[in-house]
Image: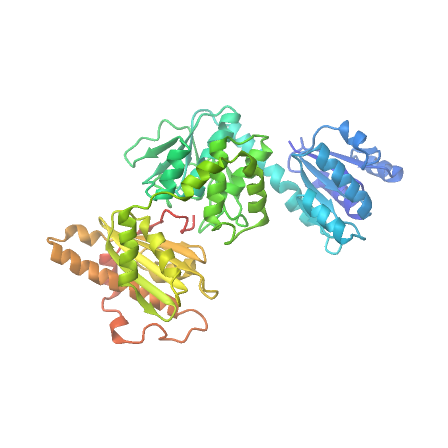
Length: 514
């Protein structure tokens, strides 16, 4: 049930008040209009819309009202709306407030509206449908939906991150288990794979986060419901069965296919899933635990590259909510962990082995033990003069791991890697960082080290050629810009590629889509 309060009833406000009852999907939803215009109150009541004749700017009027989930400030006058907004925000700090700016707003008015309202509707482009379908429902409605789904769970909940989780996935899972506990549901934050990146391990250890590491052989029968965070489909970037019934999905990545789930919240505008979970903590009136707040802030900072990449106002707002609860001393320790010698060696091999064509650098680092060194190596190559796009890859067991970075305006790495490797696997990610994980099953059948190295050499050439050709095929790039000599032409056909490379799964640093 959602309680909506309309303060002031001008042209837009009246349309909202009259149309809301027709659009509510839940007959238990409530609406109340407060306006000092008696004729409007009578007209609304004649239409069976609950209305009260009172001054919507008077704090004493609001003091006697039950706290609403959503407030719409809808007078025609800017000064009245500003006063009503200030009173509503003071009286109902947790409500989602949509405020109509009115027709005579000054720069100071606009600033004040932006400070206090969750959404501001400008007088020049006020759209009732947008208010009704979008902003009014989104924040409070999602929290209500999540609470309903959680309380319907009878038993234990598994909150599953993507494989080899990054800070955003870890923090989001921990936050959702905290929210589940608030409504009386036992939950575990679970993941498959490893947490091997030194900063990620430092976060888990220093904050003493309670996580469960699952293996493919573990039984899932102890769980009665499943939630996915920071990815959206079972069996894709996790090791759950593809047919698994999912109760909850919370993610910020654009989906690459149908998203199953009883409750699904995909916020593509958010820079991190941790941003979404922070809002849920606020909507559930939960003061975050110090460890949870620190993890969430770190997750946001990592996914937005310290608020410089794909960042939104919601990310800054989440950071401001979390900051008073963050353990800053622990955060500094997480951000400055000891770098292992093997990671430095991998970075050194990438620099030494790099092949550069114009502003694109590609490097194979050979055999690796720590896959998390690859994105760090890709970042290091990107910092070199004249380099705008990088791909670093290495081999472990029968797998090839790829990590790519770019700051070029005309490169979308997610699409580039999909173009390069969809025929021999799958890959993807964001415009400026992406990755893939290719199964090289043929390595397991090799008899000796020389044969293995020969196969690795062929796969290195295939990966390099396909990436450079995908870069080369961008609109506006002259054909042959990166394949200028015969040594860069393919030397194996697609059948050989398929023999050398199998399916692909995601990399662990938020590079792949859900």
